[in-house]
Length: 454
Image 1: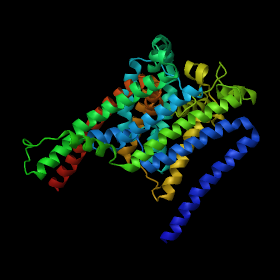
Image 2: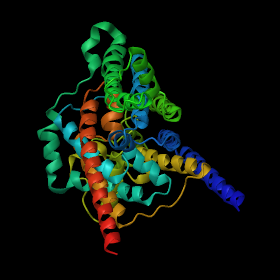
Image 3: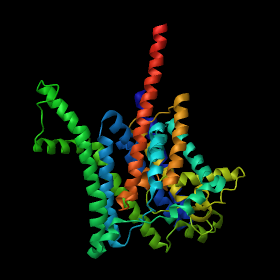
Image 4: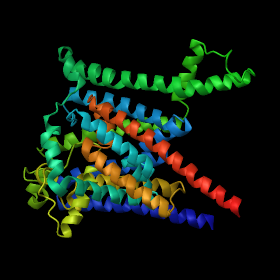
């Protein structure tokens, strides 16, 4: 019986891969320029495989660090960031990078805070929601739907988002640390973006994590071993601190490896997309869509959302808006869809295919590792999924990015705004963890009270 179940899982997994291969061939046969969309799809698939294998989720990183004092995922994210930073710097030197900084301002702090609240309440960040949906988690799928429509409505209804963009965001400067080291030539990317904005910041954050979390635990263990529970006579030598710091970083090899691979793949993603742009003489997939006759898919400026690297949430907003437009709403009378990002048909949306590929990659890994399972949320989880999804959607739009586009890619590319988002995200996650802990304890106390009455 178990053998039959394993065979079915493998057939489903290979069936998904076969489906994507058929879709890829079909797109290329339709028009060679669609290889651009296919590339995004397979990079999404790879992200899904790696995230599911490494259980890679930014919400888990903050929740585990704050509530459980577990540093595993937090460290994996930092490893991924530093590695991607090195790759981006190298691609900049070669003239093959697609990275560009975003406006730097308090909107990133506010958006990150709201997003951090939402990701903990929902139980997954933007990418975590996708890969968990691929595992059959219907609570995450509910969060994904809430993110789609909350973003679409937020940027369109009332025209307030347009006023926010034009009146504040677009007036803010774009900053990249490497620009302050132009006297060093191409080395400026490694000095400013990698060393200062990347490695040194990560080192400081990991140092603080070690001092306030891991070192404290090590001190308690040492005190217990010395039978001095009060810890009054316990101290750590410099060598012990170095060993403890290194042990913290290497505590979970699987997560560390996943982080390193994600960083490398994200860099390769940039290289391939830029190569294809050079191949087809375009800087945006909107150019390809116009050449193929899909002029209704692009914005008034002839573009679609196509950052050139790993990004989440904006493409989901496009799908939500596309669906609402089919219901009769005018979703192009705003700056976000009408001017900058367009509203392509889902089949012509390369970033949406990236998200779809991520879910399918996670599904394949979950099937092969016997971790795929349809999980139906109860009423409470369903409510949290919707609330968290709405908050993540609104936060991502205010900050012009999520945990990937607002933090990970930006910080790795030398944009200090990524760390501003990270700070806000952490503050929101902290508040949400405390709030969720209070809620859980409150619910448990009700159960205890009922048992006592009975």
